[in-house]
Length: 407
Image (cartoon, rainbow, N blue to C red; front, side, top):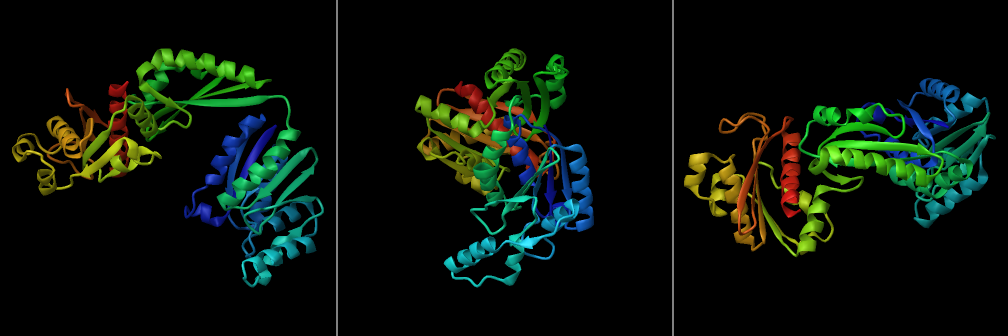
């Protein structure tokens, strides 16, 4: 089965809203054994939308459209589909009654424009929307399926999970497609690509590399008649890749560095404190993204000026000799954080984030310091990118080095 996703809305083309719906649906289709071949985005123009739907109908077995089901004049998905199939839209009185009851429940007068959302064509089966007034459509004809869902992600995702996923599971049989993502850090995309090149041309399982903020990801995708066989193919390829990339692999699928570090600290009964300079508290923010991090994270110090650094206990002469972006200062920050906040481990981070060089250090220069009370050590790294990217990569580098030491 070949699938196509169509995201509808001029706001998507203008970049005002990110198309998260397509990414979500793309992640859902493999488990159904459905191959996604195309993703299209079209604005609120009926002529262009009809053309996009016609093209999708000609080349795809399953078409999933999101957006354009609202009550306003520029919500034209229903009208475009009606034109595609040469059918008339009529108002479903049961849907109108449902809308009226919903508005009455919230003690709000229902605008007349909401009646538009009760429109339906003969070919369409109504898909209920538990979080809004825009129902979806399921249209099945000519051995093809066309699905429409509302654009707001919270409405679309619940409708998909409750109504459409089970419906498609009943219809689809045979092939199972599974994926697993391995996450690496410390290697360039080109180096990872070269290292695993023998597997990149394999037909099953396939392998693809992606550059992400937290490193290079490798996605293994297998296709088989059973879930067990698909899992076996992935496991076999994972063994091959781990044998090559070894310590550079830090996690898989939904793992995050901060959660892995947190789990390791918890398992060892250790606590952590941080001090960072030029990253503006991003390190502490990322660490505390993990629920329960208060059990092992004592706190983070943000040293953004010489006065603040001195107040946190950094030696002014040390700064004068080595500069704020140096291995010596990163180690001193780790020690200061550990001692001031009473933690087992101190983590220091300083970086030249741009937009210009700092103290002669090129943009992207990063120093990580770690002090566990017995030994102080530091790591120097350099990553290209804009200011935000360097900050993100600096934090990832700090957590990656801490993970290695904890292991």
